Length: 268
Image (cartoon, rainbow, N blue to C red; front, side):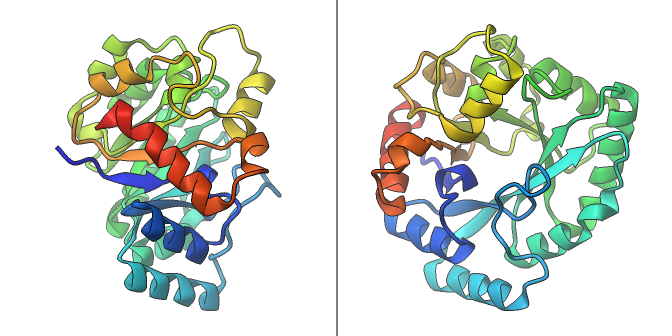
């Protein structure tokens, strides 16, 4: 069965959306991921929102290359969450025909987080994208069980989803049985990378690895092969490997190709 691969934002963070699309076309990715909203105020992002010329150029690059946009980043649900904060993101996502938006949960009040996740799914419904809740051990959605509990508590909206990242699988209490327990309709894609596995890392260490120092699949100790054997065989794979030290000596196109080549033995 042929896998679909997406060049994740973190694997092409040095590039504009147009550059990302062209690199994906050159290196064999049918999709890309874009970070159009930063993961923290002032953090890196790709600029398309409220930039009509850049959006026109990106849409033209999509047409020229045939490469689609799989996911957009990022919506964070905190205590003061208002789903309409991201209206511009939904609109651009619909124009790009994106399939999903990545969602993080930062609210320690799980009941409120659950209610706000349900609100998000409702607001996003007309735009044709799924709201994929990613568990990350330093957030308030720490493992796959928590993500499933929240999505089920929200009433399993038709556009709900759970995003599995190999890094967070390897550094949370999530087991392969927890992965197998996620209903198929909630899985739209998964992210692949590697790192040292374990539960002994501080939040600062986990964040640093996630944003700066992931490893190519096979270069760490996470059970990447077991994880992707537990996930559906037809699940699209987002190749998410950011490593500042390695990238300093590797041009973006070469890095994208290297990341895909390293991922295939674990997913094909």
